[in-house]
Image (cartoon, rainbow, N blue to C red):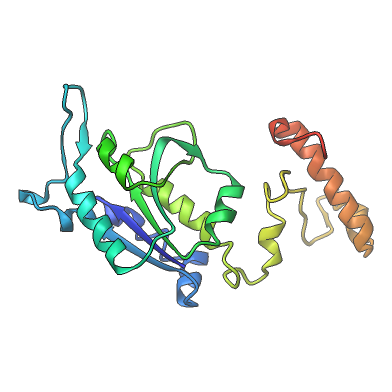
Length: 227
């Protein structure tokens, strides 16, 4: 999979893609992330990419021309499945969306900044708008890093244990159950006996019960009638 990220502050994305799972995914050739500095594609002097709002109002707006130039350049080189804009008023990111996007081949992610991007770019280029929560960040870079991580870890071969991603919270509409490791007795706090039983069926049943219980307690909004 290839992901092209468009930003005005590329330095903010240096670390998220250079370490841990995302680094390994790229080293294995399973994920190819390219970060583009939008200022390199503006026709305006002094690398200008933003301007005042028509109609007045506080805050600058990212201009349409630099974004159009870069997006069209990328689209001339390959076909993209989605052009995603990270924005607080987008559809909230959920696991199902990450699952769907992990099956794509090429994605463009636009990081908003200032008061956002010119509406004409949203109308004519953007195919999907995503928010990572009901709050506002200084820019879309951190949100883009979250999205790339959520997608990238699902690509087959990225995780050492591919079943790990399938048992994460939200994959089946439930929160993950409690997990334990050695020692079995720490300061008198003991691991539930069922996990030491060696009975996969009973352990699986216990984990499902705990998932349902935890979801009821913490995120009842995730539950539906068929659980």
